[in-house]
Length: 268
Length: 350
Image (tube, rainbow over all chains, first blue to last red; front, side):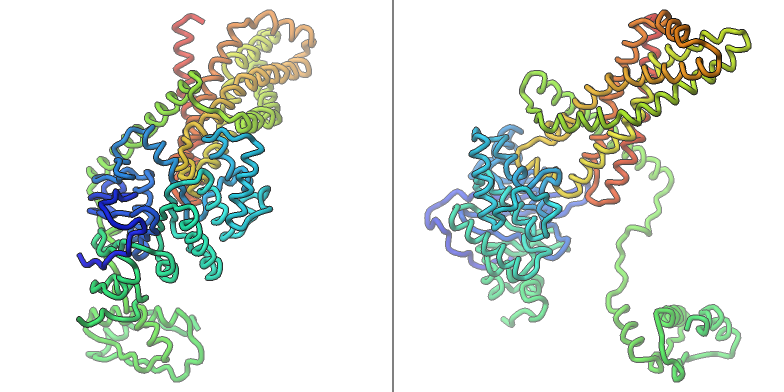
């Protein structure tokens, strides 16, 4: 399997336990296997991109990572602890450390923005109503939506819904943020702003970020490390820093993807 | 355009009856405008021609048509394997059977999970958000009053009519009161309310949860560690189970009033007569039998609605199907459980 050299680990040196370790993972819906034999690791504090063409199983892999689709085979380890084989309560505790931003935001439409962000706080913290209000205002301000507390999700544009979804994902100060196609359906400027926000949050909160994406500008702008999924063979065919992959990968599919099909494989 | 295009079959016949045609040429000198009709014509002719060994010469066609034909031929049709396999009937029976079995297992799993959630609630381990519960109680209770009023009154009226025709022959009109009273209290009050609620609340539950499912909102709950069962299903079920007996009691009353309306206006009974007869004939057992049914129906309608919603696929068409199937499932459950309960009551001698 061709793979490029990895970016320097933020922690640096030593046999560090990866934040997320995916071992030999196979994901299937019923009897149709979407992706198989996936093995990769995500280090603490890095932005990890799951890339590949449309319909190759990127989002399916994300669903596998966050526990929405139990794998047919293999396991996902968070900080060395098995996620897929642990008991439901333990798994729920691990899931509470995740923040997930869904493709269309997935805000609860029957609630206002403030209620959306407040719900996890009400359910899992001992904060008083006044404190929750403050935290909610802060989280919404972080994503540039201060003053939108009482808006219904349907009153917002797609980009705003995504940012509100991000505010909700960050409500419980998660250790790991998952993004399902953060820039899909956004105009270039909103998309850039969201990328900047992701970088900013990673740097300031120290969170690990896993993002599904097929938007090249975004992949190159934020990705520290990446895995390339191939829909035809149903498995990963490259792994490494996106820029390094662009420069060094000899796999025609990877190269074609990273250059929008414009350049052929460099002669070796 | 279209009316001047010859049909492909016509051209084919001409070629076949003519002598040894080896080439097909197009003369489009007079064509000033064209649309997909011409494109389809040429493409069909070409398809037939290549099978017959006569490759049409496309050079006479307008430039745009030639380019579109090249574009259409650029990606060969892919074998998706979706339509070309026709299973033998035994395999189809088997697949249908397996699907039905999987559906039954999914439903039983859901019912089991709902039961566990109710147990957890009774033990104080599950959370029930008061604000949600209040909204659903209003939705399944007060908001349903107008329609329950109308339907129950009319059902009472119909029952009285049906009874009156027979009883009048024997001069026993007064027994219309007994008939309407017992039918409403034991059977029709609960049943009609349940059917209204299946169409109203069951459908609403399926639509609400189904659209949340389609919009990944249910996933968002799950990954946040909030159980959809506890958060979405439990409050709806509790609300409907609490409201069903109250609505049923109300429906019983309205039904009796409907019967009374017929008795008084058409059968010449006095209000006092009618209601005295009803009161002396009905006892508490009749009402409690209806109320027990109401609770059972409430559980089943809520389960059917929530189950179909949770099962919903990820498109808006799937939400529509979820709603339809919630109502159908709900009504089937109601009639089925009503039959079982009636047999049980009978066996108990009630």
